[in-house]
View (tube, helix red, strand yellow):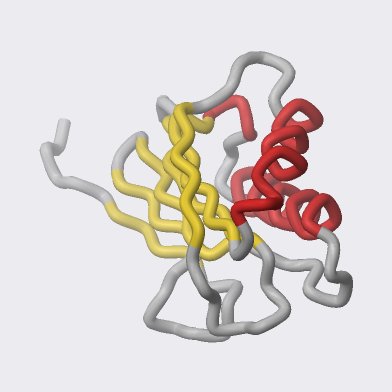
Length: 124
């Protein structure tokens, strides 16, 4: 059995090749830059598009949202916190990952939220 660490980088989804949207390191999956739905100025819509993007990335590497252990939620407006938080109920029926929420400005002026996080999926 090899002690070599395996790292796999998945192509970015944010048009910046210096920012992979997914890096697998052993049994850990590091996720970044999951956002979208910028066609609507609606936090619930953008949260749902962001979670669907996150879900698709996880599925592409053989994992699910149930494998998430930590999520960082970035909001443009703190006033959107309650509505953004409530979207978690739609996507996590088997328990919530640890979460940190903060506010920030985004490069895209229409972006209201972004998600990154860590998943754990034991590989056989």
